[in-house]
Length: 312
Image (cartoon, rainbow, N blue to C red):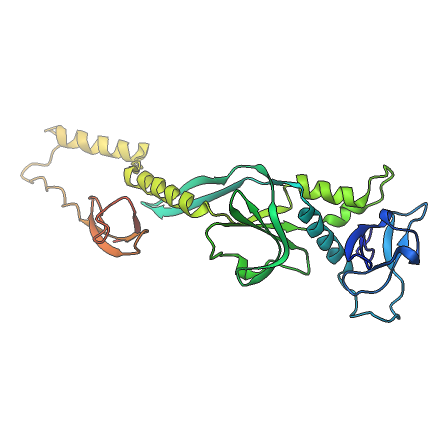
């Protein structure tokens, strides 16, 4: 099926979206395009994949040029399918926090949510949420669950990146490759059934935008990360050539016949103190401290959240 074909039409008499196999053939299907409102023809031939097609571009009641009828059709039917009630597989949600300290890159992975399956309750289509109009808002165990469908001409709104409601989850479902669902099929599977299977089982098309557990899990990951940084001891970088040089020098000074007479041995130079600048990741306070030592935040009075920024 090409992007010019419409897999699902809007039936005029009840304003519901229908599969092309659920209507009568031809112009008597009683459907219009959900994007431009042009009357549709149900193509139910013997050779090509069944689909809806626009009757003509020169008819009355056409609101606009139809550029995205395929994705609009799939998105509208997907909303209707979820509203009627299906179980939806959700992907695993993993994140990573990282910091540069003591000349090393430290990373800590954490799991926000395991892969699971949900069924939404109290579903509303095209509902307002976080200054946006989203496709689906439902409930899962008392928490709000939001679904936003995207495709090449419908990107994710920036207003959904940070939710003001900490008890809400936001999921993006990409429809970019759904035209492959409706390619030529001789098994007799309805296009509506293929879309249902996609919504229920496909994980690669789903991405977490916001999860209510992420903030607390991220804070715990930062605490583990800074504990690892505090206990980290850099390894010495000695080489065989340096060791051999020190061994030769030691042998010279330990042999009295090779030691220079009447010339005192100079004491080793003092080790200069190192000063480093630290930042507390909890309160963003910055301060300087001498090393070696334990940098303690002057506000939090704790060294667990200290991260080295620079040294001199």
